[in-house]
Length: 386
Ligand code: HEM
Ligand SMILES: *[C@@H]1O[C@H](CO)[C@@H](O)[C@H](O)[C@H]1NC(C)=O
Ligand SMILES: *[C@@H]1O[C@H](CO)[C@@H](O)[C@H](O)[C@H]1NC(C)=O
Ligand SMILES: *[C@@H]1O[C@H](CO)[C@@H](O)[C@H](O)[C@H]1NC(C)=O
Image 1: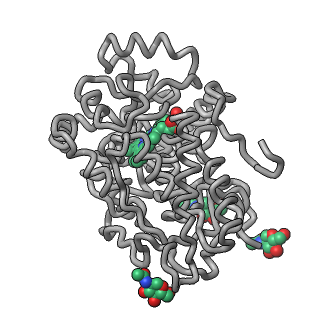
Image 2: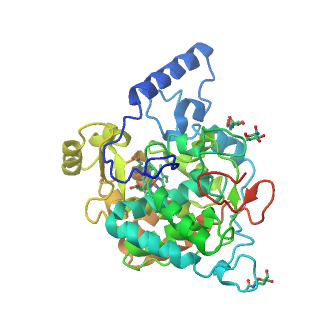
Image 3: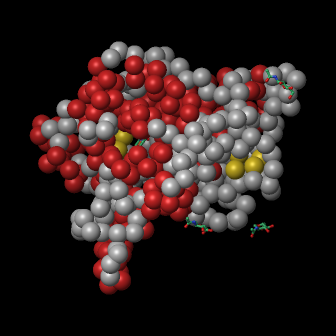
């Protein structure tokens, strides 16, 4: 790791340092206790249930009823309908416009090369890049806030420290490498947020053997703030259908887009801690295979076992067959979404087209499109400009 780079790449460590599950369990137990002592009403949302990122030791429906888990995202925001992401100000080929001050015709090619190289060496990095884009866009919009370790407010508890990201993100070094090359070619023009978006597009293309071609516009500016607590807006592996839906609605995305984007779980890896509590709910043969792989909570397994490195529609057949890992995957079998799942599983090309459009919409969430006190073109992707 080059000096000055504040994070481990996570590229090779299949078994990482324990994210202190014991601590988390203790903390959760403490919170449950406090909630009891405080008396009813105790089912007040993500403070207690961590929006599905923690499995509580006590599964008390009074504390965590489905649907009341997401106070921040669900209840308060659901009152005001959230508009569709507009992506106003973004454009295809944004950096190819000769008369614009953002002209940088090599930008997209540089990203493509960096992603190709990284994915050829390790396909999982492509999975990491697709997830990075999702985690960026869902928190403060697509503004590369997920990359920051140093912010305008000088806080160090950035999004990277949040439960969904800590010891889990992959591909950050690819973004940095592309950014360095782009800065050398045309300094101060290309945002880290756009690099993240282009990288997710390119990883999708490569891992799908060119079957998925996302028309990804550019023109995003980079944010200057990042807070770990805001990663609560991301649904967790223990989230049920109601929470999933309200989290996506809170970003202006639809139920169908939620089902479509979940198909990304056909690639990449997952830690045993996130699914080992539900072996009994899975297909028995599949569960036995997983159980044998799970030495401990931090062991990683492939998310999809037939074509683990191909971005294809296979995930949906797994969901139908009881071979999905997380609760958040398995609940797509419920009445409201099973129709889409079945369609995606059976109809050739249907999911791929929907995934292209859903990724475009994901990339339009909360974008910043001009330089001001909240936005800039960063020089280095993990820190704000001075
Ligand atoms: C619907 C709600 C979702 C939940 C609850 C969820 C949860 C998770 C969890 C728990 C992991 C494993 C992390 C780890 O063990 O370190 C994971 C991995 C992953 N997720 Fe999701 N996810 C969701 C939606 C999405 C979406 C919308 C995308 C992208 C479009 C996505 C792409 C991925 C990818 C590619 C991986 C593998 C990452 C890697 O191998 O580095 N997920 N997700
Ligand atoms: C190119 O940039 C110029 C100057 O900013 C702008 O007026 C024009 O609309 C842009 N063209 C396209 C096709 O975006
Ligand atoms: C953050 O630190 C910089 C440099 O030390 C300082 O100039 C700035 O005022 C600080 N910002 C806040 C919000 O404290
Ligand atoms: C998140 O943390 C920041 C900084 O610590 C704080 O200003 C903000 O109010 C917090 N937001 C929520 C939703 O708790």
